[in-house]
Image (cartoon, rainbow, N blue to C red; front, side):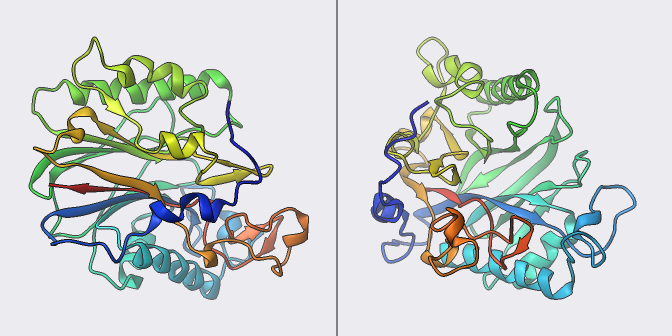
Length: 327
């Protein structure tokens, strides 16, 4: 697996790619699509159905109304700064926190949420601006794990599209389980590509791995090649990954665990097509040199809500990824 040079200044590596503002053309010609793992966006109310005891006032994290409100404000700040027109978010506990987040955002978003079977209750939701995206259907897709995929169909900037969002099993899980989930995701994407409806496909999520390592490389090998299969998908962030950029940091390396794949027809200027892709980052989203735990090799890491059991009041351990599409 290639991580790139660990000493490449991450901010400099992606500065030219991450700017979402200042270059906009007409609202009808451009749309930004993002994905963000919000890292444990829980409310404070104990659930009788899920294992959320840590995120309660009496729990391990002393998760009270003040901390919950700060978390909502932090996630909203990132999304507002990025200005995403449509964004899938992972690790949201329930519809209540999604609604609270939407109410905290400065922009006007609608949302789609479905309850998953995850034991901790963490789900995926889709936020969107109604003038850019018109949903026509939404459902969960069996992933072979408790974390189902969220499939939302509709029209994006006037073009039919299927959006497949996922939160794949982490590397703490057995390899066979991760490989089975990756294969299921690839099979679902393949079925959508060849459904005959002509809809573009966006696959995005926290893949808990990069596409240059198993099991994702194996599962998507034929689908990303596409020579013998007609429509296929491509990875618009591949060059950034190969240059050492990423959305998640581990042992000093940036890893592109969060990603967005697009169907091959989104390279055509005659349709809704890729203009550029990137990782959204601002200095406030990173742990500063003078922050607590900075001396424990976490300076420059994403500023988390908790680190080593200590409340940091941060944002997430992930950075958002995005694509900008034009027509």
